[in-house]
Amino acid sequence: MQGTKEGSFVAGAKAIWPICVGYFPLGLAFGVLAEKAGLSGMHIFFMSSLVFAGSGQFIAVSMIDAGASVLAVIMTTFMVNLRHLLMSSSLAVWYRGQPRRRLSLLACFIVDETFAVNTSRLKSGAWPLGAAIVASFLAYAAWVGSTVLGGIFGRFIAPSAFGIDYAMIAMFICLLVFQLNGFIYLIAGLAAAFAGTLAALWIPGNAFIVVGAVTGATTGLLLKRMARISGEQVREER
Image (cartoon, rainbow, N blue to C red; front, side):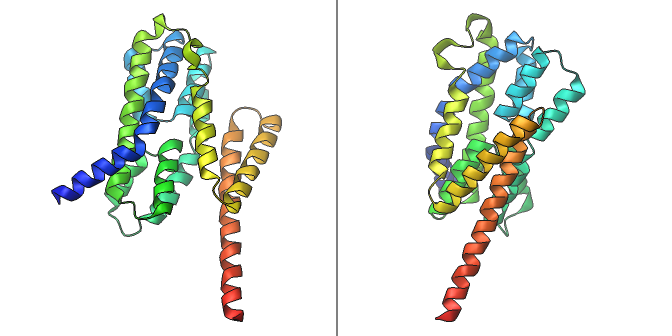
């Protein structure tokens, strides 16, 4: 049992360390912006610990800085983070039969980056739930720690310093490219981009993020079902 636990920890750490490194400039950038918006180190710590959603937190801080109401910040963050339900549900399918408490623990640490890493590993072969939890938790710890550091030293760092204001965009581009490893994923990505762009042009606020995520996930699901049905029909004809 001990060896299995150690193996899961090592596997999870090896899989997630590039994300943890990438989180450092991202977290610093968020901490800097949050400090400029008037949040204290304690505020930043609790926001990162309880929300753990980079894009949602960046949007929330920008709204706070602009003087938006508490209700508006909460509702916007909720809408932006709805995609986490889709990601957690998708991973749960891979771990059917696992204890619900362990799946709930994994769900607490699922964001775009941890979802991408875990999904990639699951597609490549066996990926124990323990390794998935370790990888996701380490990313969580890296995010919380780096945002707090950014808040502490925010007064000494300009948001544009060292390109940290572009770090989040760069990470999402890399994650997208690594996910486009097949025709279905390419079409789903294009559908998400198209729907998200239209929503950004016609729908006020940040609802375009949810629209893009739902459209991409739905398109991928439909294409996979169509491919499976076509494969079954071909086998029956043979």
